[in-house]
Length: 59
Image (tube, rainbow, N blue to C red; front, side, top):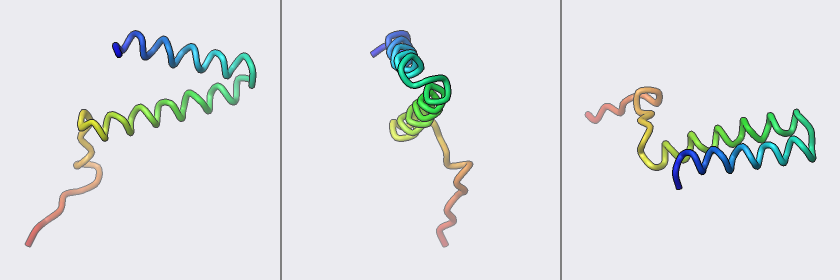
């Protein structure tokens, strides 16, 4: 799935939530979608979080 298609689907989903549930719920949906996207990037290995988690020192 291309980034353009993914962005279009996310925008459509958030728009549907906004239309049926209101702005606050749409904002919460967008925030949770961003968190899910970040987690997916970390799991795929495309984002390196080792410097934020610290380094293990084997002795």
